[in-house]
Amino acid sequence: MSDWKAICRVDDIPQLGARRVRRPAGGDVAVFRTADDRVFALLDRCPHKGGPLSQGIVFGEHVACPLHNWAISLVDGEARAPDVGCATRFAVRVDNGEVSLLAGELATLALEGAAAGTHDCDSERAARDAMRKVIAIVSA
Ligand code: FES
Image (cartoon, rainbow, N blue to C red):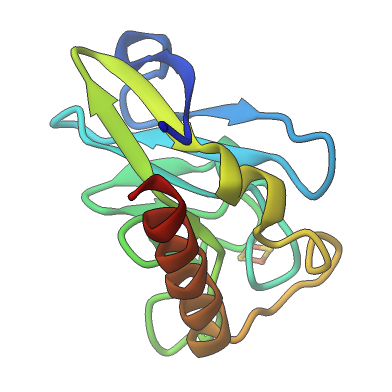
């Protein structure tokens, strides 16, 4: 049983930019494309004051928030020091140029924190790991 939900093609995402994915509940998800065509996904909400990360510029493995220029890691969602905060990260699969996100994560991650600014990275990571274990067990 596959929990992956097809979102778009890699080519549908602007290089060094993002595409927004709407969810029925919770904030939008921003799906980013790097210069070398790797794809990452974060909640479209900066951990500083909620800026739309999908409107930021991607550089390396970071996105610069368009509001106050915090650098947020696309790999783990953490703000670059000295700033402190964490954007929720979503798992991404790219298969033959098709980008997919986990339906379970889209339905469950960062629902209550959509209006909040700062996240606790450790709690976020623990919740994500727990979700992946459940998906692995259900898929087995
Ligand atoms: S809201 Fe993103 S840096 Fe301030």
